[in-house]
Image (tube, rainbow, N blue to C red; front, side, top):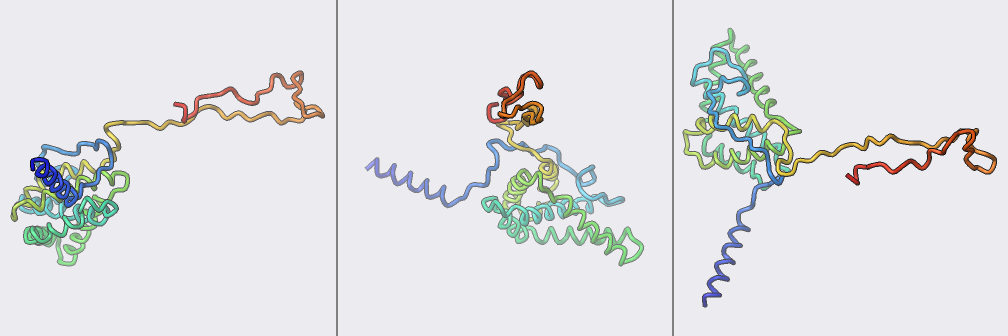
Length: 235
């Protein structure tokens, strides 16, 4: 009876593991992107500079930047479905949509306030959106960015409504860190180049007689085949 209970318990445990897919792991050990820095939004590298922005407007920018980054991840990281970047992003819009919309409205009012005409304000707002999205587009650092966006997106769907801005302030630096390319951290390796000079045989007619034999008296010791070197495969 005890053996049966153990077997059933192991079976249920295995079923639970199969029901929850693991997130993609690109390296044996990924680079640690985390940061203890909580940003306000006006720090260098936090996003588009907004001169004269109030604290409320800076917080709105943090919220919108985080939304934009997770939107980019939903588009760029679909090559790894287990990261759930699309599902997480859609859930975030449902849970935090009101806070995100208010942030966008605050940013829109900032550009209307800091430009002379409504048209100029709209143009500046459009430019802000383009620069924000472009700042999260990466190719070389895609693995690190996608893993980080997955982690933040997962935490965002468990963040209480009205606190998405706090999450953005706490995780923005980590997200920016992930835009720097990093590779394997557990087993760093270097693939070098074979620097052994390429040696070609001398084919000058003067070095060969009519029997196609090498003439040492005229050309010295034959340089072919070359002495064995150290190739990439033997390192």
